[in-house]
Length: 380
Ligand SMILES: NC(=O)c1ccc[n+]([C@@H]2O[C@H](COP(=O)([O-])OP(=O)(O)OC[C@H]3O[C@@H](n4cnc5c(N)ncnc54)[C@H](O)[C@@H]3O)[C@@H](O)[C@H]2O)c1
Image (cartoon, rainbow, N blue to C red):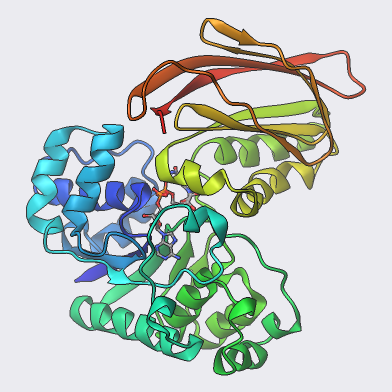
């Protein structure tokens, strides 16, 4: 047996992963090859060692702990209808038996607070060492039951805290935990530290700190435990990180870059808070800004509302939403975030779908760029 332990177990990424695996196991969903890296021939050895059929699932959450994974997945499915209902039905038998364990949300910022009532280990009054102890115990029992397991952090993006001397060496970091310096750690650091301490590989699907902190990397190297990741880079970020080096190699100057990030539901709620959003924007833009001094944009939308337009330097000249045209002409300073709300007549809870065109010009350039896409979600 083997297993995947998901942090943020009842979120969209995790429940979609769990439902897909369970539906394939139940023979109800096709084993799609395209776009699945582990289905590539290079991964034959991995697939034969860890066949999907033998992968157990579990995870940590900070909400809805009275639900099982099937109920959590059903809730997200009802809001998004993002795959066939039959997959959900087929997963019921397996997912109904999975209950997420209580996790930590230390320093996860206003974006996670905004998700509603949180049930956390620190809420029980536990110290940092006690929290780490509980996480290790959860990992340990999953590992004892299922053999080779890994931890994947698919929880909401947390804000980055400033890393100091205490984060540079394992000794100093363990000192922080012993002395219960709660302001100097984040939840993802604790999840990563506890996993690697238990010799469990750790992957960061979020742009949160996780195992990227030097002290935790030191632990991973000492323990010889693999760690990886700094955001999933599945869509827009994938395109950026692939195309940007190519432009650089071909000596093509990037004048501007705008991208839509159609954020749905809870991920959109989290990233509508500046502190949490900064980590995501940093992750999205560092690939390009590290190789060029151009102007880039990320346009995010959540629940039928365009929340942010990010441009490092330029002027937003026009936004057209469906049949309605808003005409802001706004200068966006370097690193500034701009918020626009789409007026809509639908009532709360209704699904909306808008075509959106945003035009902006880069400072110092006569070129007006346009980004076109659609925004969909439920009216909050
Ligand atoms: N959706 C994508 O394609 C995609 C791509 C790349 C990266 N990501 C990143 O993956 C993460 C998950 O995305 P999502 O769409 O599933 O978001 P989501 O909001 O649907 O799910 C996040 C879940 O994490 C839980 N959570 C928050 N803080 C937690 C903590 N400290 N411990 C345990 N659970 C916690 C929330 O309660 C929620 O259920 C986000 O950080 C997102 O930015 C998503």
